[in-house]
Length: 334
Image (tube, rainbow, N blue to C red; front, side, top):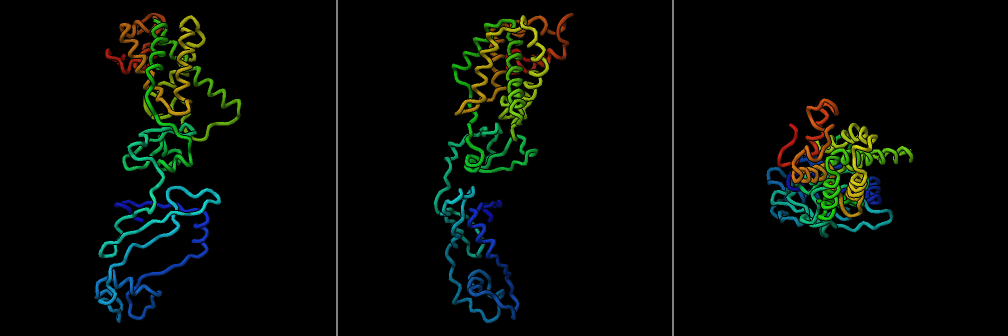
């Protein structure tokens, strides 16, 4: 059914679908003189076709009244009915003077949020991120490789809920993070990397112990929402590479700072009412602390500085610095 130039599908309840399947019919328009048309078709054609296109013997003048809206009863919008739920929605189709479909108007509005109230981004129950495309439908992050097609907000709430809007961190959460990082001093960078490692390690162990992998969604909870961004990808790689190495060297990180970062980020990823994008938010908070402290040298130990005779290779340091200082006023290592 074309609506404003685009093709859309209206899902049917199971009972209605079975009824239609059981009473399927096929018919075709024809203008040949000896063709037999179904009852009532002559009248419909007379109202919609020019006189020369009509079958012989049709009287267009007497039948040319403009037809009213055609009622499509029992059409269920957006999602199938729940088992046992009566089908109750009616839709109308309007035609122009030539009999072309011009618009589709539901008799009762779809149960959905006002567009102003719908979130631009949200995360579903499987930690799959979705974003609004600009036409009222939502697309999935990495949906192309997960067979996730675009769909309406209401359909996603019904089939993949509960959903949580992506939102910013609170002032209290930012203050707690900044206090933890500032308190760690030159151990701040290492502490953040160790915290990230503990987060991904805990989730990996949880899945291994349960014997189940989450179906769909981001690989790790802290990647949900914009999981394909370079910040999210680099964040997880650094957690497994450098974070895992630093976790074995307790003198290089601040345990109190690590625990506080883990606490705040866990709340961002698993809170009941919202989701905070982890990678960008963490980089922003770290950059702010570093700028106030005087730059990278004040928040990273000597082993995480470039051009040192001992410590991590320069390319490793640059990877860490480019992510953690990506929102710094002084710029990253690049």
